[in-house]
Length: 166
Image (cartoon, rainbow, N blue to C red):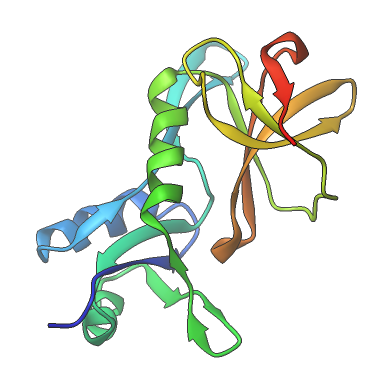
């Protein structure tokens, strides 16, 4: 039996939800992290659900079934690095799920981030998690890296809840 991994699938613009549904209909395990955003129009405000990572979703499957997943309308390609399909560790998927379940405000950032201090969260719903702390503007953020898609999940955590870990 071939080993199951989380692979990173790139989709056409704003097709993440449709692709996820079609893949689930094919019996594949899919994770599409979603966040709620308040959109302002001239006449109203509306909360919308959008993909945390624009154009990306995660598919748990075996390498030999990747081609089949690409046959779904809206699926573009699996992300590759140095000729190998990018995979995401279960711990990274769990970390994303844990952050989103707390309901804290999150942003994504795909810029290169200089190494910062390694920190542990002392309080709140993410207590006990460890990760990197960086400064962005006048705020401190807790970073969870998803290296396989060069993305970072940033959560704004007050400095008083972060402790430097050596």
